[in-house]
Image (cartoon, rainbow, N blue to C red; front, side, top):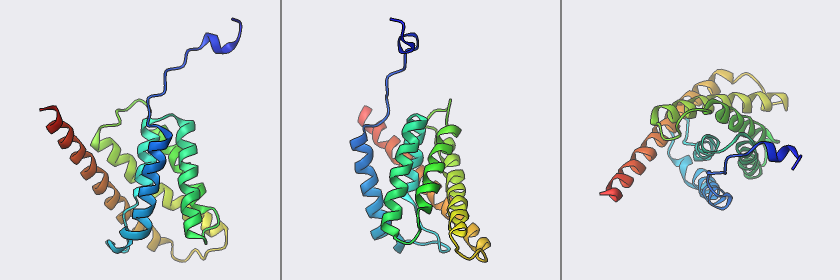
Length: 176
């Protein structure tokens, strides 16, 4: 075998199945669009779609993370109907960034995942508003959006840390 494929063995894929990730994405989109806007704190809301994208980016490779981020952002743009691709661009770039940040770390570390979620939330919002400004959105509200992104980062970290803690407790009880 003289092909280059035979020289390099690739590790088997151990991430979540596409069907599972797509189901989680659909549930996160429904929760975000239909219910979570009722729970605001300083004009910020939870973003389960972003948390899911970060989770997927952490547990999979860069290419799959980018594709999943693209699909999630595209779904958000379709549901928003007035963002002109800003969610698609920002979510894809955020998935790539989260995947790069998480290389070599454990995906079950609450502080690490919380830090990546906080950073990804702020980065995604900054990219989103930069794209919206390039599309003609007035830039005078930048500081308001930045404060909202910081509050959203806090909410997302609380949600992901709480979710991970509940999963750990459930797994610990199951092992008893």
